[in-house]
Length: 304
Image (cartoon, rainbow, N blue to C red):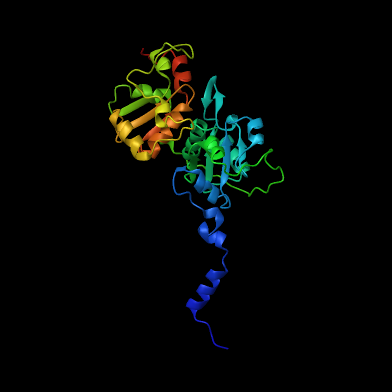
């Protein structure tokens, strides 16, 4: 019998590997999402790549009426809770990582997040993953609205209770620079390189629409409503990264600054955190206490 050379053996072994594994890299679990914002056509092609898909902030009834195949329902309270009387806070490292583990999410598991359409709640989950040191995530641009309008596959009913979920260990590697407190902002009120972006509505910023004990805004903060991150179409999607970079630069938000985003309870602020991240800004943090916390603390100054 003629002996096979080492190169021939390698070729034969390669041919024996299933194409589905080669498409995702060394293995399906090693699949790396190529960007932080993806389109429906991409996700549809990757549904067999071991991605965990999270359906955020829709009602259980809406989820059961139709969701992306194999998606998990993600209740708000898993990643957005009242803490010490302040709504919308990060719940805590242990409880959040435990929740991710129950969904089969480890430190490297690919995760795609979507919501009802505008990207608000998907952005908050994306920020949560990033804060915990998970980097293999992406938001589905346009969310459920665009996905369903494009007539992409849907499934109905609750998540299958017998669905096998891989054992996962999520060891958080906290990125402290992504989260700030009210005190952090207070200490930097006179810092010209520390930019606070208020993403609420004009009325909330001016103090004519009061949500809490006091109306107004943090002194020196910039008003840039979160909606401006999206197109004005019936089914809004995020502007392109270059458009976002040009928009924020033209509004005197410098990529070299430390930028803090806020709203009422850290959701609209998370959307702008995502937009700035997509625009290439590297020093962007979320104030999760946002106006709910700031307005409630008499030690924090208010401007109208």
